[in-house]
Amino acid sequence: MELDWIWKAVLIVVAGTLLLRVAGRKSISQMTLTQTVIMIGIGSLLIQPVAGKNIWTTIGVGLVLVLTLMVMEYLQVKSDRVERMITGKSKLLMENGQLIEKNFKKLRMTVDQLEMKLRQQGVSKLSDVKWATLEPNGQVGVELMPQAKPVTMKDFEQLQAQVQRLITMLEVQPSTRRPVSHEVGGEDIFKEIQYPSAVTPPPKHLQ
Image 1 (cartoon, one colour):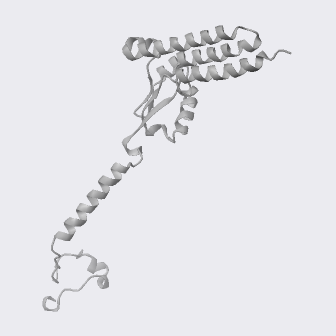
Image 2 (cartoon, helix red, strand yellow):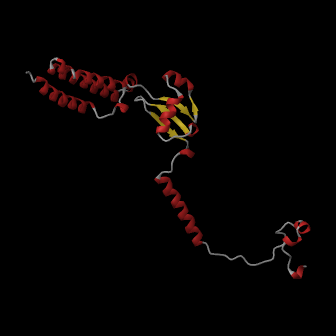
Image 3 (tube, rainbow, N blue to C red):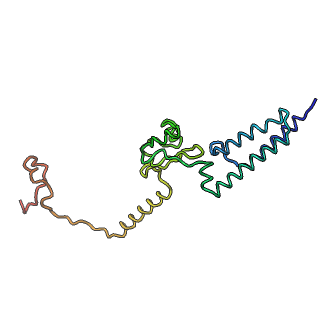
């Protein structure tokens, strides 16, 4: 009984791991279109030796695919035009709480899909969104309105510093006690006509 499939399976796992390690560690949700196509191609390619194909040819083709991916990524780093052509650009979905409907039609995306993405990021109202973009990897980028942004540690420290300054200013100012005086005109003089008992009587020497 031939047991070639055992060492072939082990070699496929090892070679596949090394190839994917060289290609990168991104998850499927973080991959661009080119990366996804090549990863699927490698996965389909690696299973062929088990079906009787030459294992070394398969590994060689997989290596060529990975090298091609690396060259394309290098070109994207060097040229913005190549990056736009291969990866694409982010598309604006919302601006100042308003949907940009024409971009939804171009992207064949529904508002329900956008709302699902926003809920996953903890956004409960469309009116709280200042900017929303669809990134090349399919993720939605969000910037909230200033009043909807959560308080950061920096904001908290600034507020704490302001409160501390106010406390210091109040402690420095001398405490002044308001002298007791009989003010005239502090109450509505018409009230004594309707509610005589509710009005504070004037001093005796002025009655």
